[in-house]
Image (cartoon, rainbow, N blue to C red):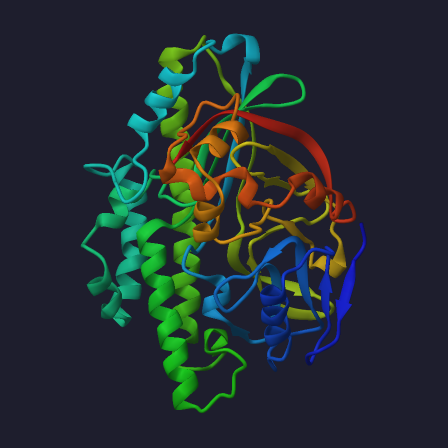
Length: 396
């Protein structure tokens, strides 16, 4: 579908790809559109909902500046999916052993590996980049235990992060996972968000929301933030790559012999990139959105009880060649816990081998938008290549 709404209440228009947008999210978009650094317009994807400062499901083009809180604290959070040379009939009737094997191989929540599982060369390369960041900003080192980041490579985290075994429309088996830059990305994000707020106060920037404080090119901390955020994004890619390796190896002893036949993509959906749009070189922040350039593959997951999609981008200029990153929440985590109970969770995840306890109640499918409506709202942005339905889900 084309743009559903155009709001003109800021310096630039807001183009929204859904009729379903909450008041808080709309106000956040209006605040962003008032900033002098925004170029051309702001785009809101069909899964848009309120975030911290900047709206989740927004695409924010900034000229010569970056808003750290728009990138957020889960820097480089995103998806990875691979198709296996297995069919549904190759899976056991009871998937509990498979879930147990994955949970044993990949630490979840705040847990990490006892020692790094990736090759020493990869750790050394990341270590050198982080040393440069900490050398200029030693406060970052004080916010996390030394070298925990290396042991968190190949770990899931909590919240809406997940590992799934899925079946596509041809009954082919896929492994799909969702995670980001873990504790070190959170530390880097919080550190530079705080620094941007302090800089805004010192320079008496008039902002509609203090979480929209930004670094401009040429300013004291701009280059340091760019380096730090790019490092965290690289770390997130490496984390997903290592996690996928661990999952696949954990499954091998329990399934018939198989190969990894195709990687869909390893894509960010909370990140900033240098791109050119509407004749301007920009820093484009996708906060809860993925790149959807023409013929570019992407992953749009639903909730833990619904469908997910492998998509191909159409290169739509009005969306800054972007699309949604998932279903998007309709309610907060606390509201989900108030509104639903364990029986609801069991009913909404029937047929999926997963946790069904109160610890994951905030991730119940009913707390999310209808993924099919989200997909219907972005037919101008992407084509569906594969439709996936999970049969196993691991949550932190």
